[in-house]
Image (cartoon, rainbow, N blue to C red; front, side, top):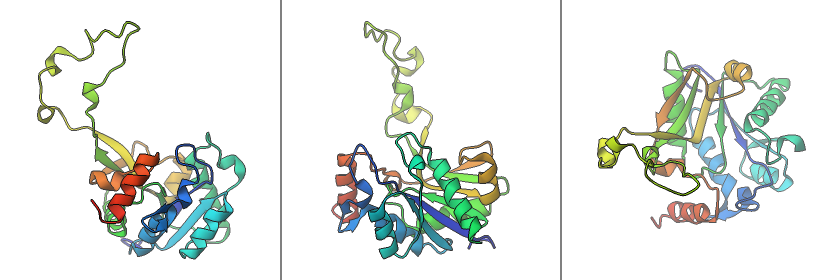
Length: 233
């Protein structure tokens, strides 16, 4: 609970994955990947309930072992093209039917294992005390500046690749750009029901360190997470 508001963390973890097969239950620094997220949520003082939404028996078993509640997700909400927001709404409705609705819904993706309970508390604290925020997303500074990127024409000419006024500027002279990391997404419960999205006109950003935004999307990311979580870097 934060500022008198209850919060439910929903961990969305489907069984299928392309880049890293079975990644949500792959061992990372001695634990299944999903366990790191569940444990972070359980150590957060602001989280009242931790719920795992999945279509996969093994993932649901790991959730139970880690002390999380579970909601079985229907197959149509666990495909490659399914929207994560629909899975969140499904879990919210299931909780409402059990009389377990809350004031805040918090999405924690299991592919961000480096975010901890302290960060979750920081983000929820920011959100709960913000006068205008109905949703809050974590962001990190872009690793590669987008103003130095462009498409290429068929002949691959770089004549107009970069505007002339940017060609000789150092990175420090350029405006800071951020990307959504998604390590913590929070919204007012009723507002998310209305919008079905965490990114709205009333969403505000919470910048974090790049480490907290690491998203396990491939084998290299998995190895990097292993190094961080085992204390080798």
